[in-house]
Structure formats: C-alpha cells, structure tokens
Length: 397
Image 1 (tube, rainbow, N blue to C red):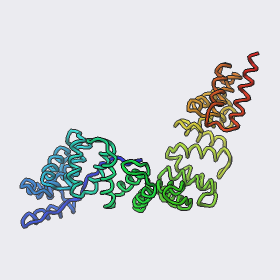
Image 2: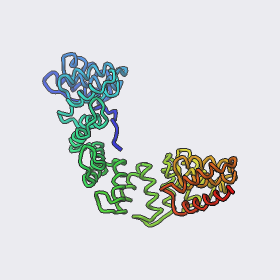
Image 3: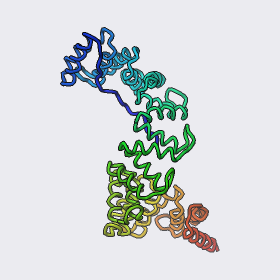
Image 4: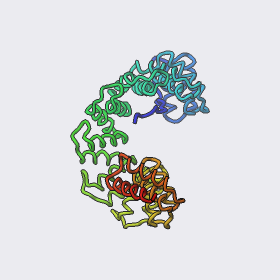
C-alpha cells in the first residue's frame, strides 16, 4: 500500500550568515538550543522584521510548535510565507504542509502543490516525496502515476525511506512505470535496510512468493522477523505461518502460536482465526475449544468468512459453547452471504431439517444449490451438495 502524506514539519533551527546579523542570529540559536525561547524570539523577531529569511523561518517554527509563544498556526504560516517568498526551501516545504492540512490557512491542495514544487525543485527531499504523493492521489493536480514515480525517484535517490517504499510499490503494481518485480525488490531492500517495517514485510512477501528474486523461505523469514520485532502485525502473522508450516525454519507450533497471538492481540483478523485453529486442534497449545471459540468470534466479528463458518460449526456441535442451532444458523448465514461454499451447504441443511430456523425446503434447495454451483467449493462440499439436492428432489414426492 502506498504510504500516505505525513504531516512533517522541518523543525531544525537554521543558521544565517553575515556580520552583525550572524552574531544576533547565533545568540538566538544558542538560546533556543538551551531552551531559552524567549531570548531566541527576541533576537529572531528583530532580524525577521528586517527581512532575514532564516529568522523568519525559525520564527514560523516557534509559532508552529508553541516554543516561547502560544502555538499559533496563522502566525506560523505568515512567517513561513515571508521566508518562502525569498526562496527559503524548508519554509516553502512547511508552507506546503500547512496548505495540505489546513493549518493556519484554508486547506488548499493546489497551493500545497505549488509550494512543494518550489522546494522540490531545489532538491528538498521531503517536498519531492510529498509532491509524489499529491500526484499519486490526485490532490491539487490531476492524478498522474508517472509524475508520482518521477518525484518518488528523486526523493528515493536521496535516501528517503518512504519514497523508496512507494517507488517499490509503483514497480510492483506497474503504476507510472512498467511492472518490474526486480526493481520493486531493489527499492524495497533500500528502504528495508533503513529499518522500515512495512517494507521489510513486503520484501519478505517477495522472497516467499519468488517475485523479483528466487523463492527463498529463509530470506522471507529473515525479513518477516525484522518487521515482526517492530510490532508489524502482518509480519507476525506470516512468521507464524512459516513456523506452522516449517518453511524457512524448523516447524515449531509453539512459535507459530506465539506470533499468531502477537498479531491477534493487535486485532489482525487472519491471526485471530489461525490462533483459533491452533486451539481447536491442540497445535502448540493444549486443545481448548473455549479458546478456539473465543478467537473465532473475534475474527468472525471482523467479517472473516472462515471464522464465521467455524464458529457456526462450534455452535452446531456444542464445542467451546453450548449447542445452539440459532447461533449456528446466524454464523453460517454471515459466511454464506460472503460466498463461503461450506457455509452455504450447511445453511441449506439447517433449513432442510428445521434446525435453528423454520423448516423451508425452498430455501434449503436455494442454499445447497448455491454451494454446488460455487466455483470455490471443494470436491467434498460439492459431492455433499449434489447428494442433498438429489435427496431434496425425492422429498417432493
């Protein structure tokens, strides 16, 4: 997924040069470094009023961050503009951010693009990145993936991590550039080496699937591990899967459970479902149907069709919960509505026998037929559906 615009303000106080100006500016800078913002404000205010761009920029930062003054975005934007009009790169960038987010000025994406472009043309890395985002999202300009890729590349070449990641995404998806998994891997690796968890995860996926590189489960595990250690839920899930299947690591169900749990605790739906499976089957943990039901429910509540179906089965069989045909029907219905073939079949079965619902042979036939015709149905479900459809036909006579 392309990374979105970050509200990033350059907060480094800059230096200025030239005689008395330098001495006064330095006094302000030293005061700011010591946390004496009132003195810094006094020194810089005088210089800013005289048109010193660096002082104007720093004054903007003080209002933007509430240092030595009450936070005041309008005043921040005012001083950024004065410095930006003199070609001050960081002020141009920050003014663009103010327009993009409607801080101290009316939100105006066209103005944001204008100021990002001025800073980007001077080589400002974050401005180049944000300008790429504006083109990618069609904010203030017509959506143009080629222009997005162009500006991402400029920032990426300067080591901007998110730009490297987004450029990798452009290559992976063929947006604005010819699809090229090798180039995607190249840019993912640059960002991953800087510690970006999103990209480390993506690089793991590329190795796991053999996209742009030879398939290598050990490398996939390596990158999943790096992202998982930073708390990235998707990587924690995938690392759990690698342990569960013994891919790139020795098979270890306890480790699989450990990583599923970390992701599940963050609300990752598939991890919650997988953790439920581990409890239901006693893999890496003692078999515990109540825990299985608990985790299936968490995933089911988020719309996971597999979990909804399994939760229906648990209620139907009274595993981990009291046997409750109405609840079974409820969860089969939710999964069936998402096209889950086994749930469609079981829902039809419930209607056929009046379990948890009023007996209704027309609805029974409807759902069992949907299961039979479902292209995702496995052979077992299809065969059962065919048998039950034939039986329903006989029940007419």
